[in-house]
Image (cartoon, rainbow, N blue to C red; front, side, top):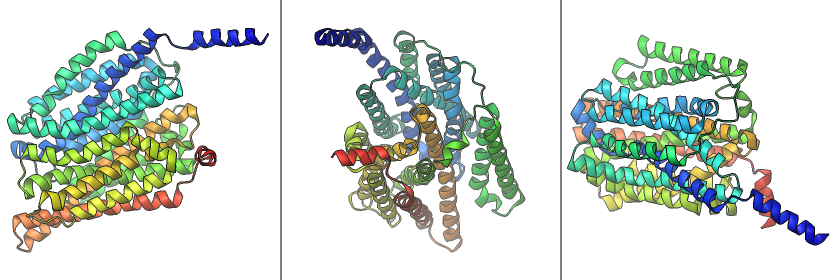
Length: 493
């Protein structure tokens, strides 16, 4: 009888276990998803290195240049959750393909742009395509790999490609801008897009999502995106038009009204874009606030560091790209598995708080960088600390955002924290770029030289960014609670 039971279990295991061909197909499909993710991450970091060249070529002002980044981030964040819902309704492969095509065509428009309006408009369209690809990619990975160990490997590889894409982006951005021109940082997406589209039909499974009767929360997506875009526009132009001007106050008021309307929509609709019930959970609320603060510090650090290196220290685009390489490589090493091992050993809270404190010190070091700074003494320590801090904090932050959520809502919680992260980055960058410009104008009016005034503006922005990261660390230490899973893990060890 016992032998029969063992035999029956073995037969059942053999039936449920994937065949070698199925397993190979899944990993090949993951390769396609990683290539799609690489496009998105590559475009995010590659732009930072070329910002000074774009500014000179198209005549951007210091504050309006932020829109080259913000136009992408705002539409990306605004359509991230909606993109996931569209994938559930119309099929993940179909939406992944449409997102890649839209992103590639927008990249072509960016590469051919000869005006500020065209570049910013194409960047906004890029953001929509990127949001669809990012949301659907995660869903496809979760659906392709259902066994926990394989899923962990797949997500680790997926995360490593994303972090590695940052390293490739800063270096490739410097090479392309120095040897050719800034247009090629966008045109490089085209061959990748063509390859991904071709492989998509062969390797990705064509299946419709499980939700067939879901209604789209289009009103929610429109209102929250419009609200945030108006708020950022008001902040970016606050220095030039005046913080107490009718336009600035009016735009901010309309943004607040739209945000209230969005919250009202989310409270009433059957399938909200951002379910408000998630924010009754302590770790979810804390992690989302931390993600906003951390993103504000991180995006400003990337944006303003590139300007400091090129405009103050006189680095070429290639030198700027190489300067960022230590940070991106350290983050990539953490995402490949080191971060997961740290979380298993110490839980979520300690790595998150420690990482944010390291990033705080990295930002604070740049807040004192001189106009004749030496890379090894004045820049490299910040690059290393920021890489360590970011690599250590990213994984715990996203895990904290999903630690209180039921498994059936983990994807939704992930989408919410990603949206909060991207919106925090856009708004934080607008605020800190405006503060830097205001301080520079004040120093110029006092008779300070242009270089000293420019560097003084960056100092203020880096210092405020350090405050953002420190606030995130304080909130994490004070309000994040140890989950039952963490407690059980520690008891076992």
